[in-house]
Image 1: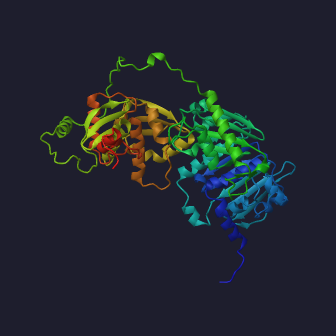
Image 2: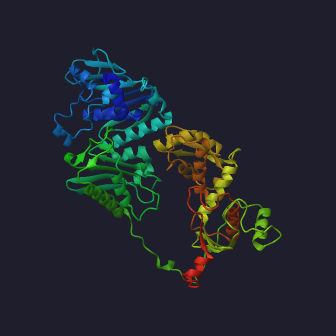
Image 3: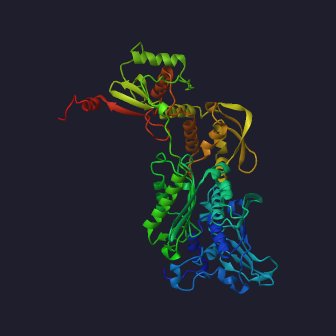
Length: 578
């Protein structure tokens, strides 16, 4: 086959693969163009999660009729004049590829009118094939309609996710830009229903409330660090509000939303020793620095940047967040009366509903431990690798101490109870899990992202014993919950299911349910610090022995630590190195 030059429309479709990954990519490019046009109001209308229609309208400067055709020409831009400008970029867009790429994989219409023009002009492009420009009446500003996205690239269309996932990505993106530009009014609608609306009055905390819930926004700490020529502003959560992943760390560099591992590491470092392992804060940070100190031309989607002095930026972010934490973290005061002494009586143990085994099961366990009539030819239960254990007691209100034939076992009561509840829950999953109707339905308001997750998981939630129905935008009414969670706060029980839930794009149904059950069991399991009676300790130990996978909790954390007799003898000097 001879070498030849590709037709422009095919070249544009190839380029579109780097710029336009999903509907949210289109929304991002169109919003950035509107912001560069100095718009004070941006309306985004989405139909069928962006597959049918993406329409972005603004009241910005507009585009003259004679330049409309250049908007969909590759590498045509008003942001750069020379190569030197690449090293001093102060606009969001500059590559001149976005509109050309979008127009090549959709039915594209651009209508624009500058303030000085008597009428508007409209450009139509169908799959990269440009049609004639026409005049019409329209308000000042620009409106871009992207219809039937990827209609001519079926492979890309097949790889789009569920509507709820695509909507969640768009909502998250629009809200981030609303935070970065609080003086711009944003309005987002899905199929005619409003999803987000900001006032444009500059109040970022009000936008935070729509993104993370009012209670979280109210308690977020203000970050305000100045290290000329750098500054770091924004918000971060106190140590008692965390998530299980870094997904809620958002960074804007000179108004541009970026993804940067070093910036995430700087925030995590600021919380060093203040958070549990595997927990992360919610942070929204706006970093300002000279344009010449950052290279934004390193990724086709402009989502990654390179800093000239990365160590200085890391230090500025880390110090700014740490200062905010220290300024709002009170110094703990220890009551002298709480000093431990041998005469201090222990509090009475409270009863814990461990759903203990039946009386016959408990008697059978006692017979095994005491060497009764049960078969004791083996010290290991069938199908497990945990030997029969003799309870010694509880230490630190968090761990059970037990003796086995091969040494000492320390059992984490929370992790062990998680494992017990998880296996009982999963054993019932083939049938309908028992649920209990609440005396009064409980209303729960979620942030947009959590609401989208819940919508996606509602069928699984119903199977797990929850009865939940929609009760307005991002609001749900819970009428029943699993019997396992009785006594728990209904709102907290629901939040623990959707918050921190790591999205798996193509999970098997059983995997989704198992992950939901694991989260429910983590909430319901007995916590460290709970004093258990001897009967409760023995019941928990017996239940753990009966589990199929007793050595780890559903999240993979160990339930027990084994100290062998050999190790104990070496520690006490009874055995020397040979």
